[in-house]
Length: 402
Image (cartoon, rainbow, N blue to C red):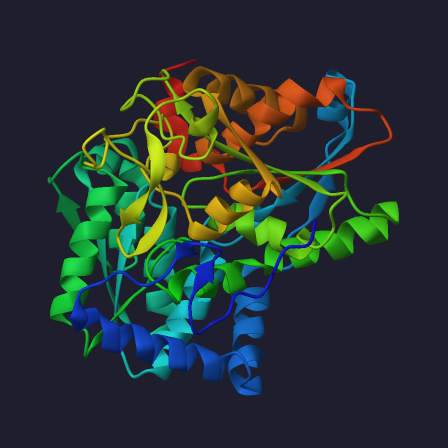
């Protein structure tokens, strides 16, 4: 099956999904951002500075590491880990933040606004703001602040203002709402540094383009190591930036199967999970709708109200998914499944004890699905799993399950 990798920029559509559903006050800054990005992507000086920062500041390229003990333990395919957890700040989020930080400076915006759930995007935003001489304001739900206290301290140490959000479920969705309200008020001086492939066009395209370096590197690395492409790609899916970052370089390779793993939470009822695409195969409450600027699959009640969600992982605890993922699911180009809280905890423990790597709980969801499937794979098959972040931030949660 062929898939249109490059989405027409004038529409920002991925099939029927995507688009730009925002108040009139945000149309001008979105058009300004789109124009700035179109110029920057062909500006050699911009790209050279971004490449330098990714290399010398963030630590790219990240290794593609063979996992021999996990491979032997599971007894199936050869497993490789794309080590985004080794990046500065501890996750893939720094890739996008560096790109958007440079765009903000290019547009003459001296302040960046961000939302965060697990805190990694907030930390990356605060880090980039400090490096580029910008000021940063980060919105975070109080539920997430409680379970990610270390990252709250890191953001404040880096000089960012962290604003607690008490509204709604006090998680990522509510943090995005508050960040957007701030942006509406301060569009002339501030850039909204959105952290995932969500929101109104051009954000899903921009974030994907800044994250696609993950898959581009992984493709070159696996071809160098194994002299061929992998059979499977695994990645967790919250909004979907780390997964689309890995998938993008392989979209035109139909023999490479792509598996996105969502949060199955603690049950199949609406409000007990955060599975938007996997929900169509057993979990409840997902159908197309508009949330925070884009048309995509959204967890919602029968009367169209946005549903509450649950995940042990703050970064997956969100009721919508990036529009490109919605299109990939509809086309059958990627498969989406869900992993329960307990399975993710056990997967984190297994990876720690077989490979000496403690993953972020987000990434542990992908590890859990791999653990489920790998024993049925052939020994000559190859898997790449995107280890999108490290588990330092989750020690308090993990300790409760020790």
